[in-house]
Image (cartoon, rainbow, N blue to C red; front, side, top):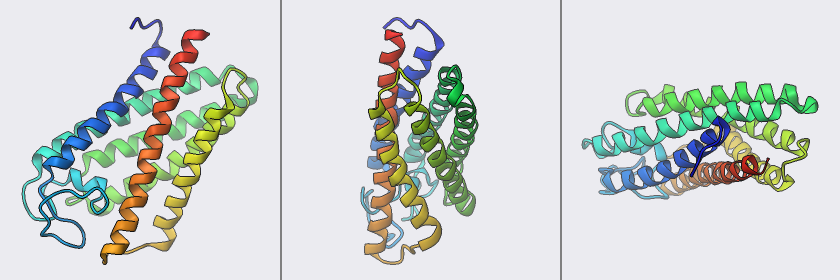
Length: 229
């Protein structure tokens, strides 16, 4: 595929960043050395019982070395985070020419960069070592990310070349992420039972994969749009 400008490169990078994230984190699950927040004696990673961050522990909850899973998780997260930061910078460049949304485009870039940075830092801080700080990074990433998604959806509505279906996808993901943020912040579920743990992990996975699929769709759509215009 011939790349004509840096916009196309940015969209290709976010697509690649998401695909490699899905592949590497899936492989990392097979190398996870066991344990979850309720039962440290399990031998493998369970999709609905283990958090995504469990993959990035230096030692798994079972107490065993988790280096292979950690390395795969960290590489996946770093590339994904950087590709998202470049993506929001490109969005600002595309949206800024529309007078109605010039200010919004600046906020999208600023908040998107902040979100991406805290996402990146979160992947660099194993939560068995930097527990509270790792969680804080996740909360800031989610809070700034959810505002970025909402502003992006609003901007799309005022951008003539964009399909409003893209805005609808963003608003759906905004709703999921916002509800997740409220539950994490205010309800403060404790993962002291299997049922509670499954609920929290399922909510995290559903929100994260919705976010990933959303931006994968956005990446492909914008790449196609860039070639048309």
